[in-house]
Image 1 (tube, one colour):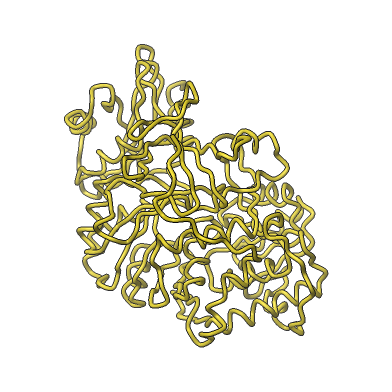
Image 2 (image 1 turned 90 degrees about the horizontal axis):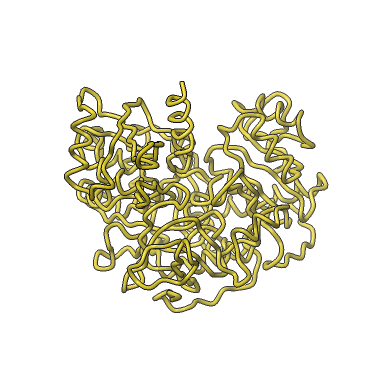
Length: 524
């Protein structure tokens, strides 16, 4: 069956993204839009709008045109939004790059999307120049100053006169983040102005951020979650975003306290710290009204634990880069929270659960692959029609590669990734479920579970465990702890203690790194 959103459809304007997003700015020019957390530097809504116009005019004077690609490789700063919307104003396309990438990885992305310019920060200029040597990049811009790069501030010294640009919101791209999708190497995700406008409009009835809210901007803006839910949606509702260039727990907690943060969009690794780290007790987080978790599975136990410790509501949402990103969100209402669920689908969003083998539609409570259909679904993968066809079928359904089920009330539960499921004697075991169980142990700081080859069973679950400081726990104790709580086929059968779990910047466990490590160890 097809599950429709419990939220009524909303009207989605067919309009360019930037003017739609900044409607609030014109009537509240003196309100802080973005604040640099470490320094306290403020960018008001009026300053933001003016800076966007001057930067766009500066880019235009350099010959930057509609349809051309501008890369941003920077940590979170208030000026990130200026650059992003200056490019968008001209009908250009922003491709966002993880600043921790190697020069080779940066060059690969620049070449794939044929980026003309790159914007970075002084510590990354040398890496940017190495990438430039391997690409067709014309010029490097820098926030601040750096040898071999043009200061971004130069663009702001323009005459502020903008060209006439006609944008077709449903066809013209605005952003090109990179995602592996369900398989393979990273691919450029083509998102249009209409995709992003749709997602903002769809979120409005479900997510109650408002002008009185202050949001922590720790999620990287190069990642779709930080870009849209934090940097964009907060500007749309007229709130304030306090940016952090990198995560450090003590700095994070101090900023949360000093700026009286009311909303925190986070990922599970940070939520683990909030639920378990002793430093949390030394800071006043009483202004925090809500923690919103996304980008990776959050166990019901951890969701309940952080809510209890901080004294605020903790809710989950779900989405993909390919869906701009949000498809599901739990309302900020205690009566509508189902612990462990990512909530019902947003307005204008349909969901179906499909049997992995037969491709038959399943009913409520039945597990299968999650398929999504709605106006936030990407246009496709850049220069990769075969990957696009693999991801989006002829009826417009996007095949997420995630396993889950929808309950009788339309709430989605994400069990795990399709490609990460462990097959134990033909039975499916979800790593995220076992990770949730293990994180309940008070001696365990972090964990990841993978399938490791086994001659008898095909695969068995193996746990990589990070212990809390000064805590001791044996592999046997860990296996017994899990065995008491799960079905026999889900038991942890191998344990390895590690210093840390490899994760992406958005908080997803890099299981392929652990799988590779496991394979190399078993063959050595």
